[in-house]
Image (cartoon, rainbow over all chains, first blue to last red; front, top):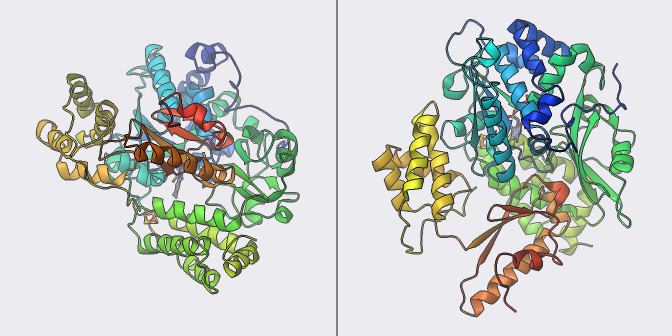
Length: 424
Length: 172
Ligand SMILES: Cc1cc2nc3c(=O)[nH]c(=O)nc-3n(C[C@H](O)[C@H](O)[C@H](O)COP(=O)(O)O)c2cc1C
Ligand code: SF4
Ligand code: FES
């Protein structure tokens, strides 16, 4: 069992340092030493180390990273790819952009190591277009890494070749879904594809491709430098390591906090983030981004921030977003914004998602406009119950899950709104 | 779904490709594994240089660069970043997702819309346009907006005018 209170800094190690983003700052503070170490290891050894470290994907699903790398066919000598999912779009999340701001080189180093481990000679960082500054920072860092010989045909004389490029999205939440992202990278509409085959076997241009979140990849140099045991010593048994938590809403210090997994929610809210702003009370919290089921103050009592504990409460850790909902927020407005978002972002390939999100948005539009009907809540339950588990990607579930939870836990408030035609 | 993609209804003349833009696009054609991957960056480049993407531009991509018009149009209409008609001088993307909404985004959007209406009532072309957009993923700085390419955080109805005046004079 690791330490769940000790605030080790991994992906935010350069936070607050002058010229944090510069290659020189990174190298002066031990940057790119993990890469040198990795070159002295066998690729299979690196994958084993990441497996033993218990690193789980930080993009939302929490899939074991080493296992994903292990799915890439080893005897396939053709091109393979590493793709960094930097499309950060999950409402409530703002952590990957912080890595671009604090230490883009940690991400780049992680990508080169990942490439060496799976035998990929090319990588892409895919970022949403609205991150104008972050994209510029990443492009500068890539250039610096080329100039210093950390990227190129024969990196540090190892004989390993790795090229890295940046690709900019164009405004579509669905491109955060890994197969949608790969479609987009191929210059197409960002429509997800049915799995299997998984990208690790058939991804970008039908070639083996590992897609990992920015935070996941940025954690790799720490693991290689310090060993799996050092990573396992942080966090809980099943959720090792640190996580970037994004706390937002009416708290005194909203922001990104790197904390060991298993950290107490109340400590984050009341100590790190300074508690609620005076005059406001905690009404609910959405952990994990807007796709995660909402939690009531009762459910938040004693909650620890790790995959298992949040799942046990019926929600999910997801991307590490912690949206603090205060007493000013109407649950009708919250649910309306949520379903409108998924309706807008549905790519339209699957009927349950395309139509289901549309129906939910219509019902919520009606309720908000004071034209709600008595059976609306029941209809929303029926619709959402039919949206999960039967579509190409998980966006449909991501719309259904929060809807069901809000309707279940705050149904009385919504029913009251329907009755009065306006907020009480 | 993306119902705000309307074809170019105003008959604005399409600005011509500049040599710099052509050079950029040519670079993209060979930069990726397949030529098709050049479509998104080429459209971004056109919009950056010329403001929006006109039908004529799609034809140039097809005829001069071999990027198939159907494939280009597919991308152009799928993604919300691309504008198919001439935008206002300073387009504003205002986040109206959960956190920004909770912290008053809609009031600020309404205030900006009020300004735009005033320009129009006076027969002037509004130097701003505003659209509500999904989470900009800077929720610790909510309410957030992007004007052109500049991000502004903690935008409230009390400070929004001061920010907008950096771009254009507001109607009195
Ligand atoms: C609708 C949808 C949106 C997603 N958006 C993101 C995203 O913005 N960033 C991200 O890293 N993963 C996102 N994911 C998860 C990815 O599909 C994928 O699981 C992840 O990039 C894998 O990386 P990881 O294992 O390192 O977490 C999304 C998934 C779905 C279904
Ligand atoms: S579930 Fe929705 S977003 Fe995902 S592929 Fe189907 S229609 Fe598209
Ligand atoms: S909700 Fe507005 S930036 Fe996230």
